[in-house]
Length: 474
Image 1: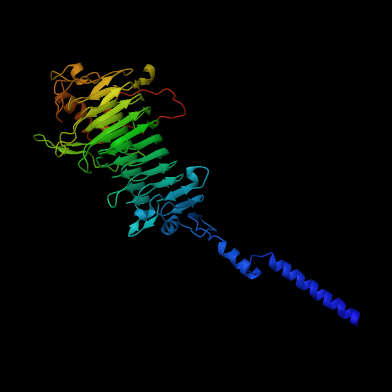
Image 2 (image 1 turned 180 degrees about the vertical axis):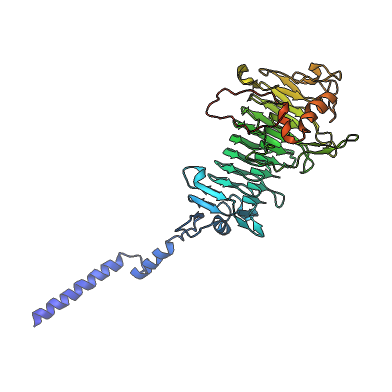
């Protein structure tokens, strides 16, 4: 019995010694429980994710709008492949830097559909609308069939400093495809627009700036629209490395009373392919109907003449100032390759053609696919010039005393008013009222095609010419 008791005591002493040694290995005044608690205190709080995912089945968010509503500044909304019948609204600076991106392999994997899409108060007008938000990014999606625009980012309420529209497809929207209005800076890139009732790409109402932030449009494909690019009162815009073809007209900066900050000015059109812009959308069988009501009517004695947008032209500078059209391939346009003219009916006389340069453009593909005439000018404004272009055919209908050199002076242009131009919005009467008004006043409008010089087009890369058939009866 004593031996057993001795063994028990020895075991207790050994256990006590072990606990003592273990305790002494810990810092003074601590315990194993307090050490565990300390470890828990050191554990960092997990950050909330700033990525929200949208999908048709199996995601928390089944609509893009619901995900946007939960997002904040610089968040990302990822949209998985599928068709989303909705109009998305992104209103206010709480969404600055938001990115909405399709996760498909190509833009057409994620479709924002306008047919039957509803918004507050009825039919959704836009696929994605950003209002008063900076640096909104929309990427890798298709927006189609909306009552107004595919993507519309604007800054009338709260400003708009920067945006990105990238790898987008805009199709068959009533007015514009990818549209930015009243914004300072931004970029539209690697995108396609077709089937719009006005233009595929639109920059409008750019605020004047002392230290301008430029807007970039590049690597675009605009076809089968009323206009490929339209820019009403746009400024500081660089359009380059893109293709504009099979539109009514290709690239059209313009000045109109309908928007603020006249005139349009200070832009470049460079390194583009601008061709086959002979889409007569006025014809009854046109797949696209213009949203435009025309340019208005004039009332000479005993006759009212209504004017429509011209078709059959590659580049139009309409009431533009300080644009450079350079190093473009311009061919196969059945009226004019490039044209510059003023608007004498503009309120305040803001739409005067001034200080525009057409330099080093290649016209007509070496004579294989010519423009009917490479260049047209109405003789208005001042400081416009033409140099280094191949080939260079000019519309020379004037019989009012202007020489060819006065209508189309070489660059740099002589100082106004000694360059033969009017320095006002009133141009040469023959150039204006016979050549220009004679086309745009065609009644019915589809008959302006009767003024074209048409021919077949040789193959060009993978493009196919488009013509509405049957044509007008001339």
